[in-house]
Image 1 (cartoon, one colour):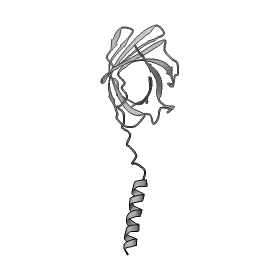
Image 2 (spheres, rainbow, N blue to C red):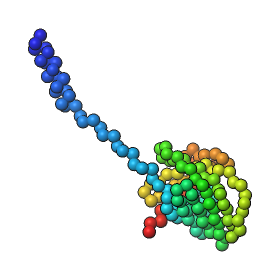
Image 3 (tube, rainbow, N blue to C red):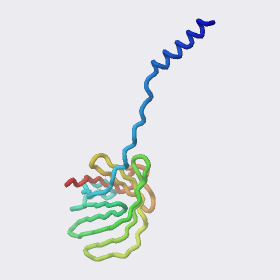
Length: 152
């Protein structure tokens, strides 16, 4: 009987010492920040024609687009809310001010629903049509734009 107890203790001790170390949980990094200035490098939108110039500046929950196309300057200010889930993350953008060719347009716009993903200094953002969030960043019914972060 004593031999069985010693054998059992020895087996438990050896199996515990031979067990692999527990896998360390990877710390999730902070949510990549949208803050900063971004320049449009590719337009995968339904129209697909890249404007002459397009920059986007984000600070906190404020986003400003500056676009020049066919000699006309556009500025659009948005209030944004971003999700904290997995990639791609959600983004909701409500236009708060629209300026076309220097003239302020006071047209109430609905909140645009979209997705975004940041990989290094590249931001891919897709906005759905008419109050509908795209299902992915390859959704053919959404306006998808690719930006690069301006590094100064």
